[in-house]
Structures are given as C-alpha cells and as structure tokens.
Image 1 (spheres, helix red, strand yellow):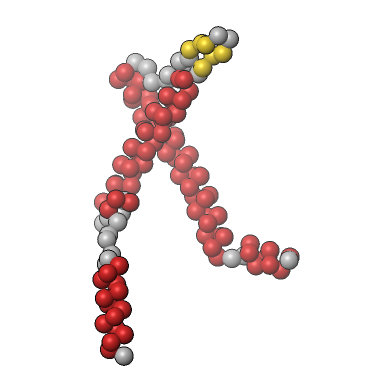
Image 2 (cartoon, rainbow, N blue to C red):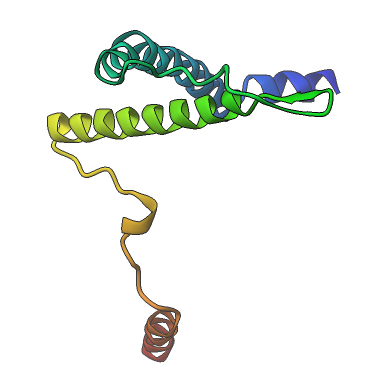
Length: 124
C-alpha cells in the first residue's frame, strides 16, 4: 500500500495538477487585486459607491443580508469581465485564438466517421 501511495504521489499527472492549482491560486490573487485595488476605486469615483454589502432587510427578528449576495455577484461579474479582457490580450500577444466552449471546432459527424470506417474496412 505504501509503494502504491508513493507511486501515486510521484505521478506526473498529480504534480502537473498541483502546479496548476498553485498557479491558479496565484492568478486569482492577481485578478482579485486588479479588481479590488484598481477597478473598484475607479467605479467608486464614477458612481460614488460600489459597496452594497451593508444592504439588508428584516423579517421579524431575522436580518437578511442581501447586500453580501449582491456584492458577490458584482465581484464575480467584474472578475469574469477583466479575466476575459486579460485572456483576449494574451491571445493577441501570443497570436493564438483561445477557443471558448461555444466556438469549439466541430469534428466530423458520427455518420461521416462510420462512412470512413466502412471505406477503410472495404480496402482490407
């Protein structure tokens, strides 16, 4: 069992995944700082306020902090937007097209694949 565990830990896939997670966490810190320290102050200067986390309403003795949820949604949208802009800039610098899920290249259809297989079988 110990040998299997050591083999599992030393697997290249595990090391690659761990590296990706660490790099992702570091990149998250950069994106969060970009939004919190640069773009949010700009938005505050334009709108006068950008923090809605204090919004709440009370039902009986219970306070519903809807502002935290709204602030999380705003932060998510801002982070997603600026991440999109960052990826587009990287795309231009590298000269590559970053494929989004709706732009995935369509491969041959199932019927075309079956037709190709049939042609290859007939050759033999």
